[in-house]
Image 1 (tube, rainbow, N blue to C red):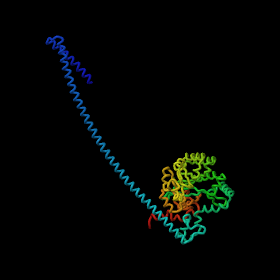
Image 2: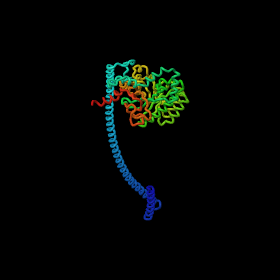
Image 3: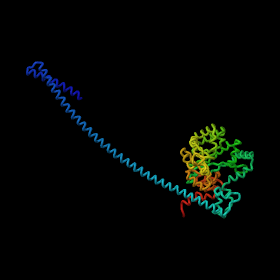
Image 4: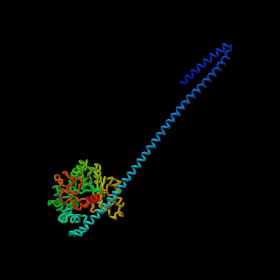
Length: 489
């Protein structure tokens, strides 16, 4: 637009100069050359005037634009300064909130540490109290013949029964506290291998297979988190055969696959009943190495587990440590098939602490059971690659939980708390107890443990049968901890 205006003005100036030259020529009578000089001179002056005027006008316009740009820059600087001030205020508030949260977290951690110290002190006091009760009972009544006097924790009712109820103290509760091993010990020596195999075969064919449950509790809260299913067989005389007595014979006779399938069926039924009341509960089921390596038996079990894979997160398959160390190609492939279906594994019968957690975690192992005596053995720190007190943290980094089993005294619990063991299992908390039948009354079993159990009644008791499902020592376990925590009165 400016260029068009300039061209138009230049043309007008040429025309004006030409007209002026003609006028001058007409008036003054100059010749053509002089008239052209005069016209060019006038045109030059007009062009110079136009250029100067346009330059002044452009400078005025540029000055106005620069002024506008300066004002915009100033406004932008003010806005940036305002945003900086607001950002600084927000950062200050965030730092203040983080500081306040950190102070609160530190306060809570301090209270948790104090509670942990109090729990340990409470456990020590309970252990000392039980030791005093045991020593007082031993002084008042001598130990029964044939049983060492140094075994009060395996049979705690000997120490407590005379003090709690001296009028009914008799040897019967002692036998009732652990009925299964006693019956098995009495029955096994009377049979040779063919007789035992025939008894096992008859028991399997007639479905005389019983499931006993032993709880696994959290430490130090002692809340039941899992149950281990322990298998027992009854012969034609209703004598009980423990797993250690009939498993080798069943494996040699080719019956272990059918037994494992029956146990899995019972365990799934138990788990369904348990999960009606508590969705966080789980069941450990032992599986034989022979079943894992037998294609026919494993295929049958795999089909059953495939049909119940919805329960896989709560159903843990348990194998011996020796089984994992002797896995062949077939066993490894079958184990991977179970892991792909969501089932988790546990290792028990641990004889040493030479454990490779990364390899076990890759194979689907999520739990390792170690006897409390093995964990607390001072010799293990020199024979294993890691100190037992650091084993729980090492396994936890690979998603494996450590379970201390065969806990039989409060003193062991106190020591295991220093090892950061999260779960415990043993006769101190509860012995293996038989399941109550489906139609049994909710009050027909033991009432000592208030965790949910597979029962159809309204009680929260574990569904066990028999009047001696709980030893009198339980009165000095969780109940004693509760009384001491509550204080006098």
